[in-house]
Length: 125
Image 1 (cartoon, one colour):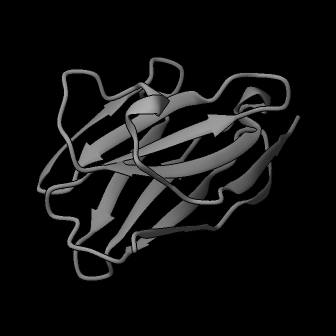
Image 2 (tube, helix red, strand yellow):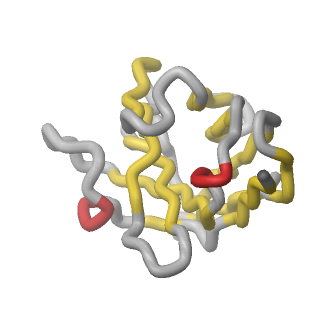
């Protein structure tokens, strides 16, 4: 059974940095597409970025490009989201997601089969 467990969220001041993690278990993830989404109160779930487990070229939403970086640790089966230059508008619940089918679109939440419970990131201005 696939499990995704996020950790590392918290409160940070605007301009600061935070790294959140997604520990994956339950099957082999070498063929997975791993993504980060976020959802603020009253808003739709928003794509943040994604990376293929077996090839390391991530894709980012325009709103975070240049500030956020996705990386992975194959030994720990963990995906990370390093967030720098945080803004108040980055405040949201951040979710890790996984899918094992490839498609041209990486940013559609409905295409992902597995989700974690999320971790809250709050940026104070």
